Image (tube, rainbow, N blue to C red; front, top):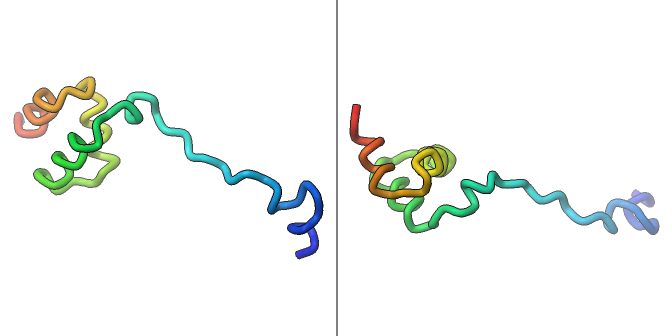
Length: 67
């Protein structure tokens, strides 16, 4: 417990930030939300399929409905 309060202890360290894939970071939130709600899939899956289609919503929607 004392370690947390010492100089350089646990409380002085910044929390680690999760690194996001740059392709996913550049996606529009509205596009991801549309895919999530219309296709009822999880956010990571929606982000992945949108990123695979270059962030193009039309291409992504076609990819999701085409067998």
